[in-house]
Image (cartoon, rainbow, N blue to C red; front, side):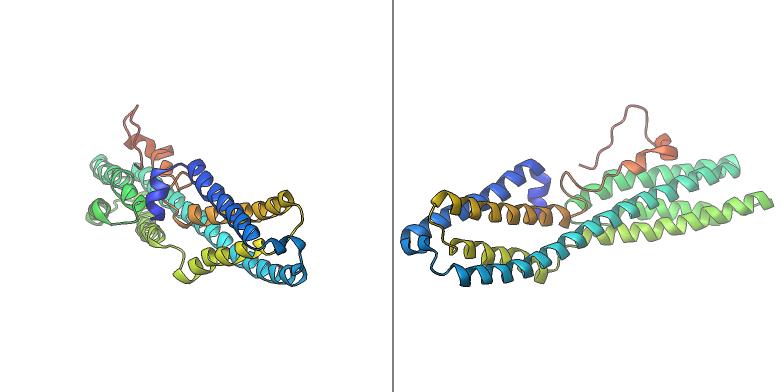
Length: 270
């Protein structure tokens, strides 16, 4: 469900629905409870409710902070993996300049096919939460076949050959890491703590009575808005390849890899 929402609605729309819906539900719940129990407005139980709110708020705040920081770190790690993979492919393309023309041409064909397969085949699959090695396995094997069939003729070629093989091995490892990150999501237990905690904390604010209705509604709305925005961050950051804040395939189209994309072409991850 989260993948479908992220891929079909903008972040602004999700913010309006998540934060706005949370605030409206909280305000409506507070009004209904105050109407059902008018004595709450006198604040007779505020001491007990205040202590409970403080305790639950502190625990829930720690949980949310941990979840958000973990997801943000995961997003940054994924961006680093993508950038490193693209950089290694670009370095192989540059190293191939030391090889004979026919080897360089075969390696260019394999590398060009690889970056196209990553952007045009793998990226939409990762956005949908169904990562697959797919066509990249064939193109990566083609690059291995070219290097394995070639024997360097000079010490200069040997240096660039060893560098190219090392970078190609790094590409294979980073591709696996990228696909692994595309499959990861917040563990069910943390999802229960993050979303279930909101269902516990927000209703507690209804019990904190204030004589002025506007002041109480402002208090309830402020707390629910903060919680709603935090939950929005959890949803948006949980899937690094989905939504507007997702990791971009741009590194595979820039620098030395730009030559594999015809001028004027605009490949996308959609």
